[in-house]
Image (cartoon, rainbow, N blue to C red; front, side):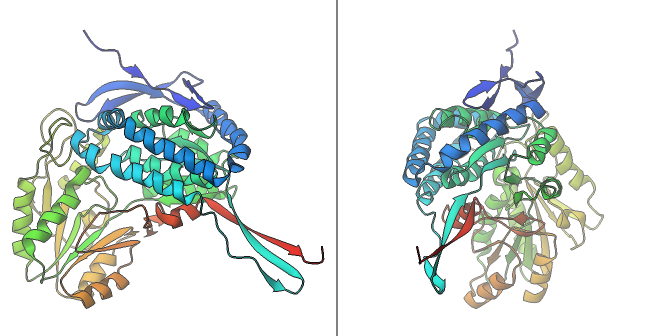
Amino acid sequence: MTTEPRRLRNYINGEFRDAAEGGTIEVVNPATGEAYATAPLSRQADVDAAMAAAEAAFPAWRDTVPAERQKVLLKIADAFEERAEELIAAESENTGKPLALTRTEEIPPMVDQIRFFAGAARMLDGRSAGEYMDGLTSMVRREPIGVCAQVTPWNYPMMMAVWKFAPALAAGNTVVLKPSDTTPASTVLMAEIIGAIVPKGVFNVICGDRETGRAMVEHPTPAMASITGSVRAGTQVAESAAKDLKRVHLELGGKAPVVVFEDVDIAKAVGAIAEAGYFNAGQDCTAATRVLVHESIHDEFVTALAKVAEGTRTGTPEDEDVLYGPLNNANQLERVSGFIERLPAHARVETGGHRVGDKGYFFAPTVVSGLRQDDEIIQNEVFGPVITVQPFTDEAQALAYANGVEYALASSVWTKDHARAMRMSKALDFGCVWINTHIPLVAEMPHGGFKKSGYGKDLSAYGFDDYTRIKHVMTSLDG
């Protein structure tokens, strides 16, 4: 007896709906490779309906005082905590992530981030009023932008949704959000939870594919388009948004350098770097997957890293003794495998480099050495559990290698030399530099990159500001 796949639905103007044209997308559990649900394949009519709902809801939400918006966001955070197990189950089915790690590593920061932006809702400040011309007083108003079209990726469907809707709602905007076509389940559940708290039309979710996302960005209603995704997707969004001068917020790919100097404790560094490289199957744009090691400790480091990799387990969501689950989809498994298959002759696979099992999309923790700076696997984002290692001779070469890619999102430096760490953090051309750690994020600090990693910030007061606009108001003192 086969179980009928459950039906996910769009959430528009306070109600769940099928796609207007009736189209659906099959949703596959990456841990099994089997379909467990269908989601709407939204088209123009669905986008129009969601945008109309968000536009109609905007004036009232915009005019809600910050204290009221704060209360709403705090209720959402509380509701996420109360329904955490449902969210964890949906996210794990979406992604194949370990249940235990999703419980400890995703729910708490998500809730904390919503509460941070709840507080930020009451910080819509501008510069103080003053007279800059005789007889006239100037002031600055900080206002919401309007309707925000938001597109989230498949690597962190829940958390990336929080990073987008929380600052947008806190600032007084309304939202139309589209999850990835491979991971809609947890976002649809979030819509159910949020929809019970916010006025109808303030938060809308539509499911679909790239064409759905393109229709959202091209729609005349949104004042802002925000996407977390690939460089290709970000470029397309920027080109499309330019036609009507929408504001654009882009968090794109990464190729984080991990610069390890000769004075480190090798065992400690290897353990921390492996965890930061393999967590979430390396499907993280900040993952510690491009390691640069001083030549004097290179061989010892590679041997130690390969040993740690061999002791790192991937497995099903229910297994509490695994660090990561499967790659998200069949295309991603093919992509990661392709990088290994196309390795040049001078490269060496120290361990891993292959699929694990014949069910689901699992890939072994992998270490590759013997690489050169212009190799494909060094220059391009793999987005899988693959750590590359290159030697460097001195600080100048380390910087040249580190900065010698098109991405500029995150980086880390590993050394006991404080002055060296300060020099490196100044010279590294990345939006984040960690020192003797890699991957921690906090709600109070900004996350976002340079170059082809995009522009705009998530988290922090800077991320909140991105969802606002400023207006100059000048008044005559003559009455």
